[in-house]
Amino acid sequence: MKKIFAFVAIAISLVAVSCTKPAANGNGNDNGKQQEEVNVDLTALNALLSECKTLADAATTDSWAQKAIDDFKAVIATVEKAIPAATTQAAVDNLLAQLKTAKETFLAAEIGAIPADALAWALSFEEGSGTELKTTGKYEWTVKLLPGEEGAPKFVDGHKAGSKGLQFGYGAYGEFQDAVASVLETPTFSIACWVNTAIYENNYILSWNKWDTWKFQTQSTNKAFLTVHFGDVWIDHDGNTEIPENEWHHVVATCDLTNGAMEFYLDGELTMRWDKENEGKLDITNKTFAPAPEGTKLLLGLQEPDSETGFYTGKLDDLAFYTVALDGGQVAKLFNDQK
Image 1 (cartoon, rainbow, N blue to C red):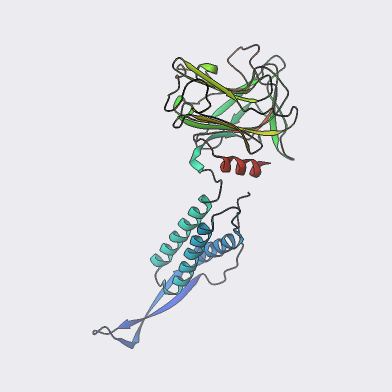
Image 2: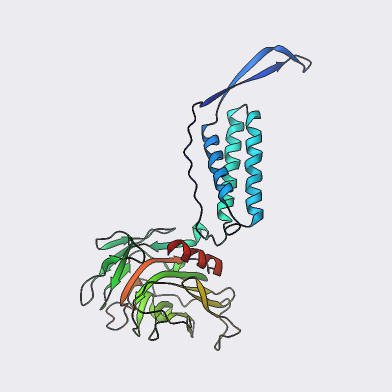
């Protein structure tokens, strides 16, 4: 479901509100004579209040639990009711802070929402030209686009109208200059991207020390394929569903070492879950990755430097790496938001 962002333009002609507060006599009784004038600025509070009302009114149970909607509306009503009594700027600022927190909590409660800090890095390829990319997300890394037999990766039309993607072939690849092992060897992670490719045996999308730590690719049957390595154990699985050739499709692979599971999704739908019940090999619960050697580069579209066969052939768009194992709702929302 689409996240609802409501930005409402409002005209506020009165920025400062004058309030009169009767002074009390020595016995605590109002003598009706002395007056204290206080000026408070309600501009930001009124603007946010209007925005939150619109957001709450448009919210549906397709995107939020009813309790989340009710709780948000309750805070809005409480804040609105308290405004006339907010006769100091500190009181107004306190109401503003309460409303900001309520809005953040509500947006985070959207069904399928992915926590912002779970996105380690992403590549949209919207640069459209050049030989370097910059990741967005928690980590801003540089990716150099380097040539294969027929030159470097080329910018092409992406998976939806007006977007950009990147085409790879014959060893063209990207090299992350500042990726770090502590991010890439996390016990839970997810890789999400749009692919447009034909069948190729060693279609490497991402490689962190190839199969000796982990790699993500499509295989000879054009299924998503993830390999992870722990000590002397290698585990590799596919998504159990062929990706249609030469078309844009959304692919996600997740790995969760805390519960020993891998999951694969195609166009927002779970196609395969591997865990200790159907692993067929060894339980990967609470395993740790075989660390990549110092100096290892995260590679985009290539198995390892100078590889003559392990490279990606096709197009990629909206590639992202998360430090959580996305669940089905999050994957479905990601797909629907990007399609």
